[in-house]
Length: 105
Image 1: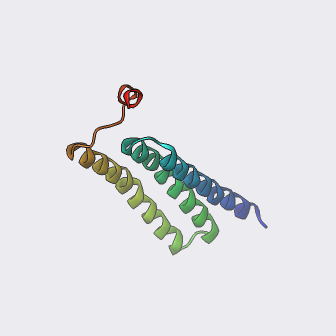
Image 2: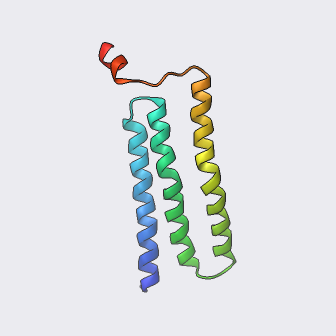
């Protein structure tokens, strides 16, 4: 196993662990906005690590260019989609859970 393969598997494993961490954050957070925040923070970096590891596996080829284009698309669309989802929930009337309201329930 070469050095590039080891580094690429490190990036792929780090992306998988970050994805699992985001899933745990979605499960553990108390309200919708916290869950969206946990997912929005981890999904872009998780995808970036996966795609970086995969592009190192393929070497310099057309597949690497395609993976780079996928990353560029995800880099711009994922935070935008997270913001749009949270904004739509706020405009729809979904209130965030605050500490004052949680202690009264």
